[in-house]
Image (cartoon, rainbow, N blue to C red):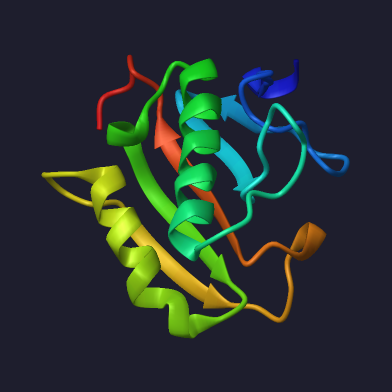
Length: 134
C-alpha cells in the first residue's frame, strides 16, 4: 500500500455505514473513524440515555483500537460530536471514566445539527500503536 497506510477492520465494531475504513494506520498512528452508538451485533442504534449511547461508542472505539494494536490509554486526540450540547456534562462523566487517571487526550467537542442514522453522539480518535512511543 502506498506510503505504508494500512486499513483496520474488525467485526467487533460496527461495519462502516459509508465508503470509509473503521480506521487506518500510518507510521504507528491510528486514525479511527467516528463511531456512533451502533450495536455491532444488531447493527441498530443503542437506545436509552446519552450515557448508554456514549458507553457503546467507546466500546466500539476500544474494539477498533484493539484491532489496530492500540488502546484507550494510547489515545492522543478525540473529537466528540453532539446534537445537543446540553448533554455535554453527562457525556463528560462517561469520557472521564473511559480515560481514567493520567493525562487525558487533547479534545474538541462540537455541536452539530445531525449525525448518521439519527445518532445523538459520535466520537473519533487518533491514537499511537502500542509499539509507538508517546
